Image (tube, rainbow, N blue to C red; front, side, top):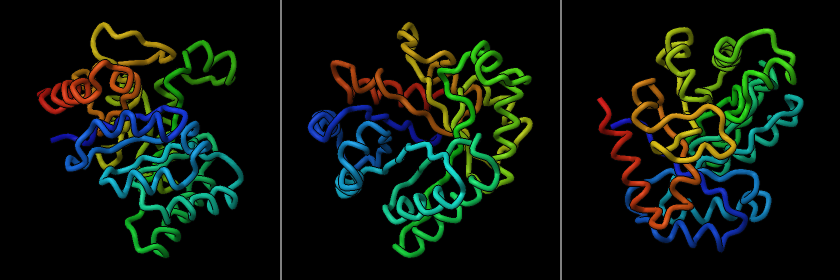
Length: 239
């Protein structure tokens, strides 16, 4: 069994959330991801509601600010009992280390496990052209992602969010003792939407992803539960 296939719940409010989530059994220990839209609209209570129903939560807010501000924010997140959360690796080593410290302090205070800290390398919407011409980065995409992943690992992060296309290089250069959580997962022949660097679940397994993040192919499906289980089977059964 590989790591989780995390369902990204990119909806605007709790009504939209529970319209989807109430279709799923709660005894599977499924992990769901909440991002900015839902969290900013509903607040921490939506996290507590999901935890009470038996779901594991990935709170994806991608913090990036001065180290102390991020530390204080992560203390709050650490108290919630979520399983994963995120910062931007581009925030730098001091910020990442402060984020980890905040998570540890908050979770210890609340008596819950410390969330895994994942650093976002380059968003899957970023193209090679944008990396060069907008970020003024002299490295190519793979080298840039590897560089940020090494920085994140040195600074105390537990893993990175990265395109599945970079995972093979990451595992070779950063190591197997690190999480490689990959969004941009699409079934074969599914539109890429605004994702530029995508893969199928079986391809991600071959590349060595630790866990997958899937949104629209599941939550926009006519039968989200069936779509989830089909992708989960493909993810877990790839040799």
